[in-house]
Amino acid sequence: MVPAVSWRRLGAAAVAVALSLELVYRFMRRRRRPVREVLFFPAPLLCSEPLLSPEKQCACPLPHRTDGPMSQLLRRLLGARRSLEVCIFTFSSPPLARAVLLLHGRGVRVRVITDSDYMAAAGSQIGELRKAGVEVRHNQHSGFMHHKFAVLDQRIVMTGSMNWTMQAIQTNQENLLITDDSACVRAYLEEFERLWEEYNPTSYCFFPKKAEEGP
Ligand SMILES: [Zn+2]
Image (cartoon, rainbow, N blue to C red):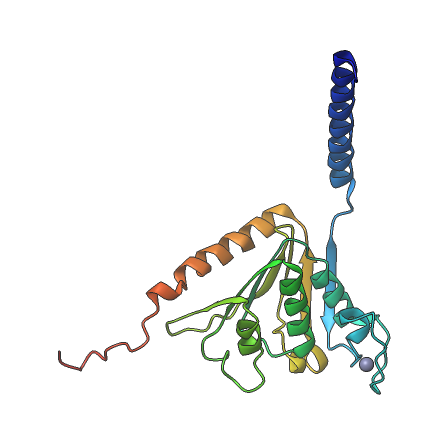
């Protein structure tokens, strides 16, 4: 039988180890290099499979390099571990939808806000996301939901001119700023939460009465 004093020592040692780990974790967090990236598009057309399913050997004719702004964007996105808020006017890029679905499948809490006029447009990925169980909300009134930003793990925000479309990625001149500046991240998260509540489906009005219609 282990004497009582040994149990006490063991307990004290366990507490000391836990405290040291906590201190190391806090130290590492403070030492983490700040995230300040600016990506410019259009990006060269590359296969995204090396990043989306690295375990498979892809035989498609596209280059399988993992450099360039699209790869950087995908890498950042796939780095999310706990939460992802996407607030995007038009979402029709299959590789970006794959990345969002991968995160959803890993248990990352994903929420998407988009524009009601564009979510049903040809090629939109919103239906696929919904089918997979991703929570999606949209605007209900006139005026576009024209934002283009995403927040990762409540720590990093990516924002700029770019819609999540193949046209934007491969053809347009677009910019994307990625930062972990806490004031910026907080502001974008607050805006997301504000819209998330405003677009709560319980307040959707599916068949609004026209003003001239009688009772
Ligand atoms: Zn390929």
